[in-house]
Image (tube, rainbow, N blue to C red; front, top):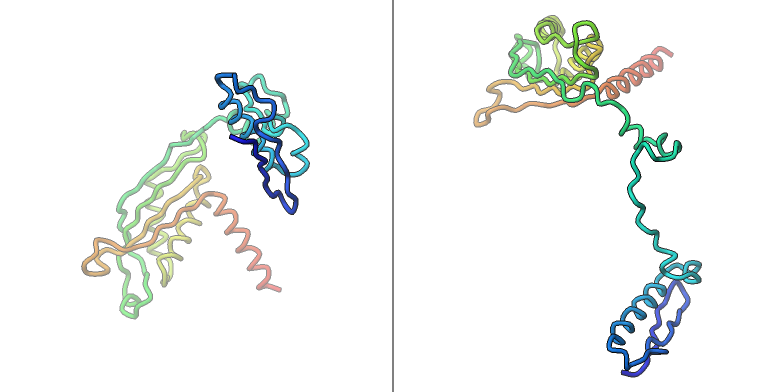
Length: 226
């Protein structure tokens, strides 16, 4: 095998590699492997950015850093968001109250016949705690929650869309239950369409979504008042 020169274009310039067989002793039983290793190193350097080609390829590749326990890391690393997540206690995560198939009559719908009288809607709710549930610190009384939702839907005026009704229920939930951190509401009308088991809407909110909605509503009211 004769010595060859490998060339490649990096940007607008052509970089020429050294002959692969230069200085190779063919009497060495492993000379072919040494040629392959040398060729791989040369080719890697051809495709590096121009400033990096002035250094060896091994200097460009960042070595894998060993794992260091959190207690032994510098204080700067401990202040990072990732370190904060590792240190922060996971209080209240996993605790939730679930309510399945709460049937409540309310005035809902866009069709003319739906304005005549209230009709039942079925509510599935999942209420996630933001703290450890306790009678002194904060808890979600599911009995009171069902009664409050039923009274709210019975007294409110007609709502055209299920989506807007879900938003109003979410606002009520976050406003009156400080222990609530996340909420999932699924609403549907029973037997609304033949051939289907149920059709409805689902809303997933966190307390951050509630705060953002409240701020946007306050800004809209202020703009309307001017």
